Amino acid sequence: MSIVKHGLQAGNWTKLGLISSSAPDLYQLSLTNDKENLIGSVVEGFIIWPLGPNGISTLTKLNLPTEFRNVISRPAGSNSCIINKEKDKAIAGVREYMFIWDVHSETLIKYFKAHYGRIIHMSSLTEGDWNCAVSSSMDRTIKVWSMSNIVEQVYHIQKHENQIEKLEVGESAGLAVSMTRSNVGIWNLKTGELTTNISKVAVSESDKLYIWSLTNRAVVSATEEPGIEQMFFNSMDLRIITARPLENQVYISCREVSTLNLIYDIQTYIKKFRQVCVTPDNYYLVLLGYDDTARKEQLSIYHLYKGTYLFRIQLRYPQLRDVYRLVGFNQFHVALIDSEKANLINLREKKFSRSILKWSGEKTKDQNYGLGAPARGGLYLIDLKSGNISATYIEQVNEGVFRRNAGFTENEEYVWYYHSGRKTIRLFRTLEGVMISNLCIAGDILAIASTSWSLLAGGVDGSLSMYCIADPRIQEKRNLLFNLPSRTGDLDTSQLMLRRNPLVRFRVAARVSILLLRRLERLRQRRPKSENDICSIS
Image (cartoon, rainbow, N blue to C red; front, side, top):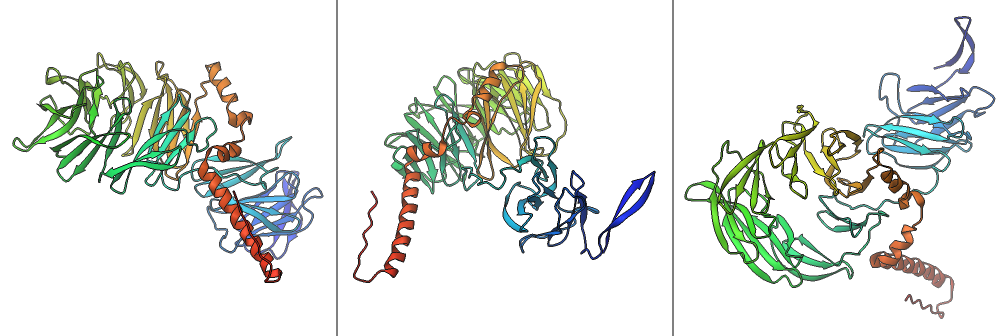
């Protein structure tokens, strides 16, 4: 295969010369931005040919590792390779990895995982003071890389080994708690580091209930509690309530947090488990039970502090549908949420009150407004007093069978909406109903929480991402963004972690011990057998 150079002169193409007469099979040819070099993609890697006096002067071959190969990704197209401004580094994207070569020595310097999905295309931005590489991927992200320091060490981003299933935020303490199948993570909202400032946390694992002291990293108390599906604190965080479904029954236990001593235990029949709820007046504990005689579901109401059975309410209201959620509402009401509406039950009068169409259970702190995200699509702000729609954020459009989550931010100034099919988080102003952001997420999100100024997203890869809400109409939001420690560089998080986290200190000491022992072993092999070595680390 030969490569010939042609030029356009007076409207006609003219042959200017032969670039190569024995080129291998090529998947793609591309010119650099300054037209000084020609880059070809072959199976084993890339070949760079010189074209002008200011480019790379010699024929350069850049080979990929043996486990990587270039493939044809589209007609007359393959993986892209670019050159930095100094003409000494070549960068290419193959699969989801990025490779960096030294052009003069034709050696591979490093490669690393740059995207979650396959890299589709790479371009160079070397105009003026810019010296950047731009990569686009099938994970629906575009990333800009600085080619001046791309060879430098990439710092590890802390994350869990398993996917994050639940998030809780304590904005006043500046902390977030993430839960996976195997552990619990405590995150600093300002620095993004793992910390241990919360005194106690309850964890259910391996058919046992544990109370952990995060300061000492030790189990304070434990008890047998198999099959826990729901767990929450109550009564000034002095009690913990758990729900355990087993076949056609549910077991609800209330225990003291400090000792896990049992206060009361509830056992009742159910048809299908739904999470229990507590009324806003902290008096009633409500669950959806089952009347075996009438073969119908019913509301079973218990005393929250004593655990005694109070009464039951039969479900009789218009358009009775399958209930998937219970929400405490307006002091002594409970809302039964189904696919179309929310049905309010007055617990004091023991009867059905009214229905609120399209309400999904999310509500403001004053319980005046709620969010509606029905299965048929759409997002609405609903006046809970009148039941009317106050604002429409998203019109009702069939977007497929995907998971949808919606909620208010902590200060209730914004509404967020996540769609698992689109993999986007849309942000709206609550009162105006105007969308101010449409953020595309690279991976799947299973847990979302919010503060008054940010959104937190827990991914399936175990990472916790935090996005600052920078409303362009509010100057305070801009000032907050500019003053973040990640922007100002005021905090050395690595030193903070070593100082606060005893587990990190232990790992560092263990690593130093291993290195010293290896060094001493080499010295023993060199010295006479009569010499002895002693090492002590305190």
